[in-house]
Image 1 (cartoon, rainbow, N blue to C red):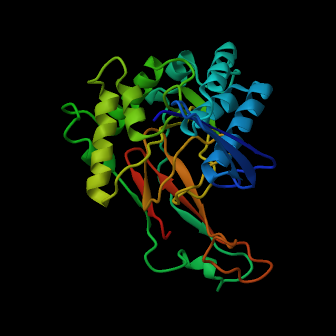
Image 2: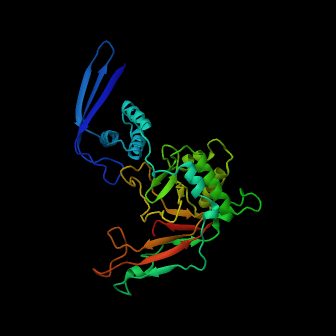
Length: 342
């Protein structure tokens, strides 16, 4: 028995919301026909399934991105369209359009800019700086001043971690932070133009598809040289993280800060499956237990804020509650680690 089958779905007012699946209602028409001597046509009209609605919503998002002709948005929607099995003909059409577009100046670091700005000789490390805390201005007894909202919360900065983490791959007499810093810059310069792209207040090094899985990051670092220092260094950091904290590393983000004006904007890390970081986010999130951030180069100040919104366990002390802010310093070679309860 041979059967041919096709499904056509339609819907209006679909919405991705804050997750990865579309919400809304739609209708699907499913038709199949037997091709033997007793040919039979069967037509079924039913409510569209969630995956069909998601594919429809992604198809419209891709068409919208093609009409806007904005490089970063179109690239992101092409990546998401592939994962959601949008019609390949439409994806190919979008790919041809993408090749005709140029990334705007300022949205990525060129090889020349990387070589000029990302030099070890340009790093700064202030002496004698201390961590400081700004308590709630409304009340000295505000819960925000406690530093944590419940048991089990952990947020620590540990110094000189990278030297220990890279011990097995580090050349003799080399300083781990300087060695890995220069290796990553060399890998970024060797990568195709546009792979160090602007995201928020900083720049990210990824492959052309902007995939931030561990395998994809290591592949771009080792492209052209499987034994590259950058690849060996990042592999060692992943192994150290998994061994030290009992994590399984599910994502790697290589942030480049070319000057004192760049920053990693304040945000909550996404630890739940089915969430996304924005309309053009291409990451696939899963339930996570913590984050470890390693710092190379100039010292940078970290701001953590006690929040009193609906997602926080802190309760405001009143309408005038300002929350509490803590400013901590991360120096080259150190690590900041926090867990999901925090």
